[in-house]
Length: 394
Image 1 (tube, rainbow, N blue to C red):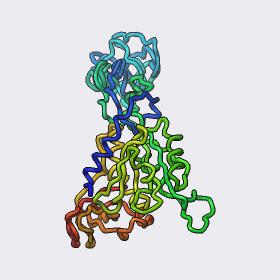
Image 2 (cartoon, rainbow, N blue to C red; image 1 turned 30 degrees about the vertical axis):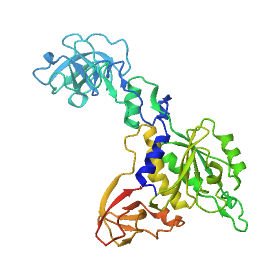
Image 3 (cartoon, rainbow, N blue to C red; image 1 turned 135 degrees about the vertical axis):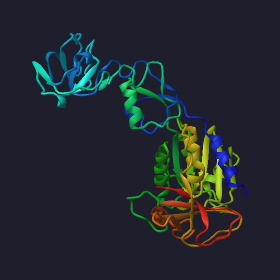
């Protein structure tokens, strides 16, 4: 069987770096900056007040309390500020431009708040409460490095520097296609032998959470020709096709039957759940075929697809955060296969417990898990207290 690492490399090699696109600031959150962001202006662009109060010359502020005439009012946004005459003060608001000649700002709380003249009871040294031009950012400096994941603070500084758009790695476009004549869309009545289709919605949500963009295809019957036709009709503009189901060793495995010899290689991977896997290209479009059991499908996504999608989009953190924690209960594991077990964390005890059985159909237990326990292929049993690798799913 193929090792987990070998198959992970096969899947990762399918995807090229996502193209660079310019997007409005409001659409950049969560995406990865593709090029260094270089400031074209100083920030602040001009010296301004950090306080509501009075701009003055420090040389005039001796022998408190003193009274000075108020020579002008300077609200934020004023564009015709005149120079400050010696022996006077200017009433000034936070963010308003400092008048030429002024070198300090007295907080309004240290004055009587006068508008014609102002009594000043004390003052800070020169330069205090004054934001100088370029104090935060100087023109020509790199403000955000390529590879930065954009969030609120990054959008804020880009906006403050006048950028309306940012160059980012475009989300990977993924077509999610589930197969099976037994599948029925949620909301419709079930017939005999039918089940509600859950994998496509689950995988699409996981792709979105990883940073990609998912489109769910219409369901197709277990028919080779119909499957290929549906695939050809919907792969335009798609970076990756992900299927679930139809890849095992039995009869009526439509995905395997349709894609064998068409550029997709099928393999058994030494893992539980998720042993049957496939990866390759169909008519030059990358494809990853996942097993149909829902837990197998989701675990396969976490192990193989999440890192590959995030790598293509330029993220540095490809995998889930991982810890080594002691087990709160023993675990048995099959020889020769790396096992991925659902787990639940106990933050107070600092332990992790297996959650539900290993069955790949136990979807409700997956929904209740906040961790994944990784048991290496060479290990067949672990006692309570044994340290294990734990992936944090929350």
